[in-house]
Length: 455
Image (tube, rainbow, N blue to C red; front, top):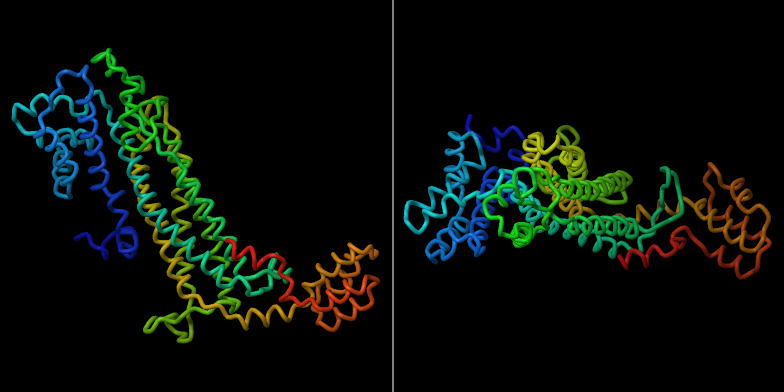
């Protein structure tokens, strides 16, 4: 059966392929091979800059241009050639080395370079740098820009709805009022904080040989300052050098990356569930899309499918991210191979994450606030002013203020008239009494409006 969006096993390459297609540039098999090739070529070029490695000094411009073209022009057909070589070698990184040998050709200018491809490297020297670049580039070029769009959309919504007073529901019960804008601003602030944390995760890389001690490097060229030399190489790739490794870079930074991304996703799950609930209450309506169907039997329905889709995809992503964070930093002795197949699934978690981000963004674009529905709900809950009244009573020394309001309001609804009769009988200054009598549920929102506008 030919592979297509219809025949793909997984939804990220099938049903949702168009929603995460740009991640193929960073997490596909092609992308992994391309990044491996980049690392191999850049390492060969870097070796040519060390005067002590006399065999590589004086490379012609033709050779330099050839090496740059291998990287700059690398395409899917090149990756296919490497996969064909791998079918014989049964080793994916060695296949890249043999591919580069072929690309250098048989000329006298390139002959001396061939044995310096993959020089003093173990496969993990190449792989860890390739994966670090994949994760860093996907974060900076795809994930964070979409995160920025989400935070911006939420901030704009918070500003627009900053003055929409709303009944809170702590424990699902009527509680002190807030504004819809302030509740949205809470999520914008939380997501922005996790986005900054993700951007601050430092990708690490190593290039120190089979067990992390520069063994082969030192025996071949003991005069080269390998620690400094490889540090410069890794940093030129945009990564931070990790000197303390076994055969593998221990992946602690990838665990940090996954943990932070999972926290961002968890906040987004919280947002999806809250918005789903506000839609259920009628606080938000959803714009109906012509020709879309909400139910196969109930024609009236406009379901909050975007937030449901996002919540489901975020759950799948976080399950994978949690496994990555727990598993990848653990490796028996100097190396085992259990991380290899796990790392190949990084893109799956990123894809489900990106699908969810886009579903939330789509859902936000459909929301219309029903200010009348929100106001009616709040105006039917005068008991929420019990907090305000008992707090003022405390200020003026009225005995047992909490207990008196509890007797008046706990477990039952009261109307404006009942509360005002209670206030009129209080032994408090007239100015305080007038202020309480003028207070309404919609006017009891504290600094919510300001906080929403400052988000």
